[in-house]
Image (cartoon, rainbow over all chains, first blue to last red; front, side, top):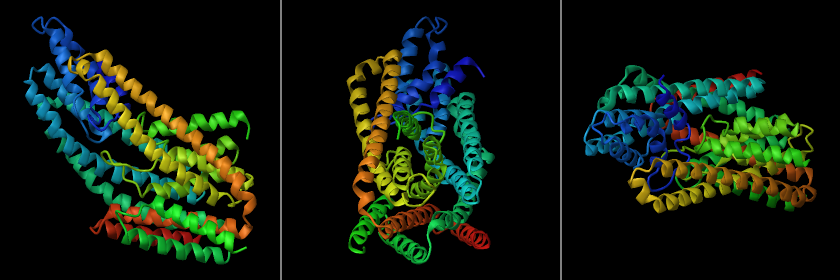
Length: 250
Length: 229
């Protein structure tokens, strides 16, 4: 790993630190790309290195929005393209073209796959009495995948430059995206009854039955009013009703 | 609760709040991690694990894609554990779960709103520095980024502090006024809502495709293990 790539990778861990509604991750991506652009300052670039560097830094901080773990792919690819003297408009088009695929792939692979899968395994571990081992296992396993993905993305972007689309079609990546969905569904499905049992362990008699009935009713409500009613609102509403009932039923 | 414990909870809540979006997204922000550590700080891991599991179920209702607005359950879980510990006396009873959930859900809502505000502040700061950014000033770029992280850390600390304060307030107002039956009702409401949110959120994610069969197989398997234990 070159020092510049190392710096860029470290900065990628903060890529959403200055997230805003205008440039989205733009500023963070610019900060992560900057170490890879420093070579452009050298006089070897036709003597106008300073101007090339500043123009590239300015472009790197423009609007960008994708999955944070895969931003490195765009960072590496754009930086490589800048080094290869690709016309600015083409670099901008590359960044814009990568937003959608990187967002979609990352959401499927991580937010809707790897993360809930690992979280469900942690829930199962805790529910079965694994305690701290389940938590430490979750952090270790999840982050092994997380860090590997960030590192792969940056390296693939830096290696492929303008041809980075090829990296996205890697069979391993496609296979992982295809497998993570069913694995997540299976694990979370198994975690739900075990977590329910773990949480209702302290209840006895009528309260156990009440949990089953209210949970079923709450689920039906959330399903029927999906898009309008959230888990948070349902929770607050049920707690308000329970507080009211507690006041009346003494 | 000693000042030292309170400061430790505040520091943990701030780290957890920063982790969710800004730095470094290693998922200490997940309730299943944030809760037990908060419990350990309080010397009450049982409450930490229970609230961690409960809020992890609520977390399944959230898919943090794009610029979506969602509740922030990390610092919320820290506040929830603190409130539940105070209400339950730390003796491993489930008495404080309902109160903890109430405090946590309100804190989660405040956390979500505060993230939206910070993003707007970041946009304003970026807007003000637009000219120098377009000139390719790397120092301005880095400064803007660091300021954004600092803003998020301040936000996370404020949300955690508000949550911890809310927990103390709720304990003072609610605990003495509730009978054991009332406390059980709150617990039932909290646990039921968590299970419902977890199930509905996962089903939305799984959809009607082949994943549904895997989900059903998981539920059957999990239920069988739960029944056999």
